[in-house]
Amino acid sequence: MKRVWVFVEGKSDVLALSVLWTDWKQKLGKKGWRIQLIPLANKSKYLRNIGVRASDKLVSNMNDLVVGLPDLYPNREFVKTNFRHSNLHELRSLQIQLVKQEVKQKARTVAVDACMKRFFASAMKHDLEMLLLAAPSQLRKRLKMSDSSVVCRQPPEDQNQDQPPKKIVEELFRTRLKRSYREITDSQDILSKAALSEVLFDKKQGDKCPTFRAMLDWIGTKTQIPAY
Image 1 (cartoon, helix red, strand yellow):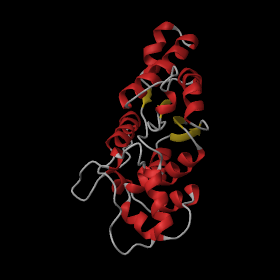
Image 2 (tube, helix red, strand yellow; image 1 turned 90 degrees about the horizontal axis):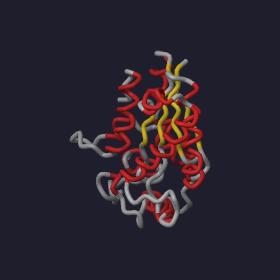
Image 3 (cartoon, helix red, strand yellow; image 1 turned 90 degrees about the vertical axis):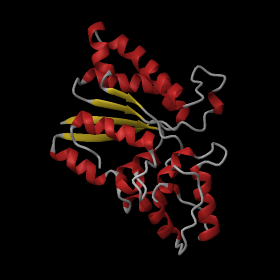
């Protein structure tokens, strides 16, 4: 079976994306593909290890695909390190650089480009709670909200680093349910009931998560099994 290896920062990303992609994973499985989500503990460890870990997958099986999916924000702690990046373009370029230098060590020179064509450097622009803001109807149900006032920037990917999706969701749980937001259980419950199309598009078919969707489109094109 061919695999799509998706490297993320933490376990909560794995669990949330797994439930959101349930239907797509079943379709991929019927065509001989499996998506495997791999957590690298946190962003610092992700950046230190993505080169080695992704290159291992690319070199060991020439049919497999690899996706890098860290969070773009927060990024201030990396300003004075070799992993500094101030925007999405720089984070993508950094991942490509880290993976390519490792591939060169493991593969024959003629195979490097072929390997890198199977690597897609992407990012979640914020924590996974970005996806909860992109599924407002299911978020409101979890919060037992009768009104539609989930206030955030649109599209949901464009939240401010100082007011990230996680902070917004945590505050909603405190004010609406009078309890703390439980990252793993609450995110899974919300996303397990959300259609992927709801997360990606608004009622007028506007693009809510273009960066996230571009990653899905790349996998869909490579596997010939669209995500939505």
